[in-house]
Image 1 (cartoon, rainbow, N blue to C red):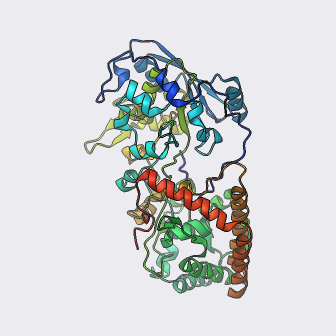
Image 2: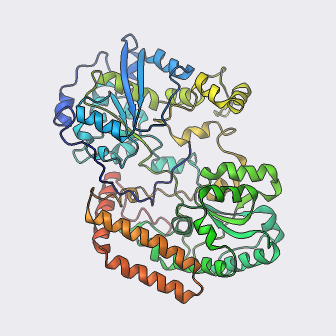
Image 3: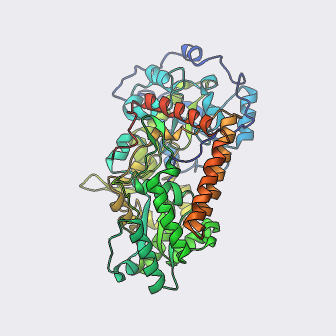
Length: 543
């Protein structure tokens, strides 16, 4: 599963035509929860309820709002889930049109997984879903031992209840554990760096000089490459340690003085022939091809894990030319990097609906899949059959299983189903098998970024605006303006021209509701800080 960098992404709730209000069973979460049937078993906070409830035959329907979702329902993992829980699960995949139809009918599947936390249905979950905190208390308090308390707090709605639980949600503890890997870095070809004497790069001037030396010594290479999706703004800002918010308010990262010094340095690199306009317009496919062929001498890399195959391809073909991470884009004010990974919002949240006739079994399934037992089963299978346990507590998929997965992945997935049930997935489980977690080409990136991951969770909801709001529209316009402005700045012929573009951007946003946008963002950050119990300056731990 590719990781998704959540922090910094625009999370504007679109005005989708979802028929949410008044279309689902029940008039409120508390009323629906009050009507829950009694538990079939005696619940125990130290033991998952499914172990005591396995004699009852259960049937659930699970809808996933993604058309590509196609779990191997006859696989050995799926069969083991059915056997352990004595359950039959019908999986249904679809898109928003199908989801709308469910809502319009008022008859939802037992379990619903939304396409993401910004799906409009998430905001009204109290109208169609049951609160997980109340379900756990009544049916399976073991859930509270294995679910992240910080994630549960993050997902609370205004009524104080939590309805959905997202996959791949990282807590602050996950960031600190070392199991979650950083993926932002400045990398350079090992042979190029060593041939230039492995110079120390600590200032914008050093950086410009390095690119000029590369241009002179390696005319067939492009000195500087950069991935899409914010490499020249959010990634550079993260490498520089530019805060996301200060004193409980959103920080204006795009006009940070330290960052602008580096934008000017990048502009000088471009003016000296270090990259061309074509790179700004290149597709992701072209970028990956350039990385795998080693065409770039260096790269500002915003998502190393997403480009792992390209990085590994170069390393395997030409080991001496592999990309290695070095400290190059560094703060001139002493700030340390604030690197990002998937945040606390995670990916797709899953809910138990008002329509379920068996909420107890649904809650047991949640606990089962979230538990260590369920995670080991769905990620690795069975000890001695598909994996071996090492003396240090790590595991390793058996050679026969790895060979089958590599030679015929479709057949492997259909037979075993390992790695396919990731709707309760989490990246920390990849660390359990270090031999198969990530390709070797990422090692220097992980090593360099160790200790720099910084949870910026309040920022994740900063740019969530009400559907159809003026602020949401203005934010989109300002964001689009910034994209074109930054491209103009780094390709400008002179520093004066670059500054003129920046001034135009600042004037544009001032005239397009910037102060009102900031007011909404600040209110969102304040609410998120309160929900997470984080201090106002949690975003600036290095200052």
